[in-house]
Image (cartoon, rainbow over all chains, first blue to last red):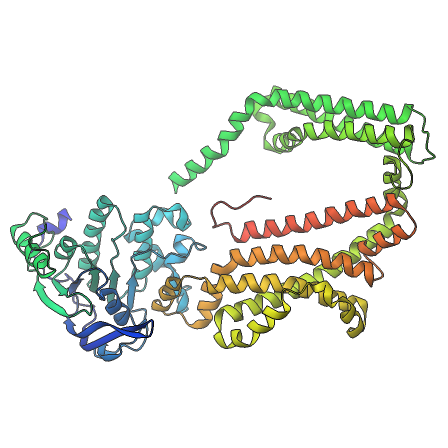
Length: 268
Length: 348
């Protein structure tokens, strides 16, 4: 991070953008629960430029994670359209990988074999073994390649799941509260690592978080959602150089604004 | 990795260090056991038999030999303590294992002494229900060929039936857990037929199948298949959807989801089913052999009872117990190897 501070300020990636462009138009989605329709997303439209880091912020249970599942292709929206690089999303694709809140590593596989999953599903493992080693080295787990998940700490497990995503050289990294269950120190370290990875790799990031500060520290843009059914309440540009500091006055101002949008202006 | 390796090695050496203090005393126990077995041999050989029994000499020799082995082992234990580190693991590990058994050896020697005195020496217990230790030995020396044939026949029948039943049960379980359409048709059938003890099919099976061997194979397979199918099914059905989500976002097709996600995740359940299936297959094996099949340990038991040869029955029971226990042990070993990734496995 220190080295990065010397360089000129860059808004997105230092490399030419390899990230995906994301476009959502008038997305409606919901579930049928006990016979009644429960709307979750209401007329959500947004666009993410290649290489942008966008955080989705909103009250707990508002439907942010549902939106991520739609982007990942795990579910299809009931109405509206969602396209990545101009192509309609119809199903999951390894170029759009998800890092979930739980690491969800397969306990029967070693760290290495977990990280190599994406290559294995596509039959690329034999020719691209080196990519697994690279990804593990990138997240600092090269010494734990042969460990089983139950031998890892929470932070290490989440790093392993990050490596599992990075092995696929994603154009879009989808993060569903990836640091939500980590202790605060590990969280700080990994926030820094995420920024560094994003800056060096140039992929687009779409991250759900309910931590206002985390969103403002990491993202170029913060999209604030209303309570369920989720509508977009605001789209805040965070025009600050990296690395950012928690006590930057502009960041504090944005924090107050975001908290206000979430209905917390006077309570904190 | 180093942290893990270190943690592993320290936890591995801790019990050894703690056991150091007791080592000499258990070595002493082994010496006591050795002399007790020698005394048992003397009792068997020197005290004239009241019953008409053969193989007294052989029994005495066996007891003496066993005692001598224990004394040799304790001498080896002392020697390796004298030599110290250089003795190495190849000697120390088996010696430590033998040493742990010393209390058992002592109790066994006392038990056989009581048994011997009450039967062969004083003739206190009625024959043929309570044969002497000599008669027990005689079963193995004189009838080993028939016993061995019976053991092989039982093993072959059991393994055939178990393998078929486990394979079918596993396949049905995976299909049930995976596909709702399969579940629609198989589930009601399984609910009705599954809980029925396989032995209830016995009369019908012997009637329908051309040979008693094929009928018994079918019954053993049936007894194995049900628990394996149910447990595999619940294992596959219980796999976290998050595991599938992960694989799907990484580009997995359904073949990958079944073979590389559902089945490995369900494997701990599958093994519970296999253990239950193996247990019920033992029961069916014995009943089938007693009622229809003209070979195997169950048949041998039946045959020995017909001749009131109780010593042979005890002998066959021991062989059967060893067979079942060995098979369970083998299954445990397979599981330990396949599920090495699990924490806190029960050790058999």
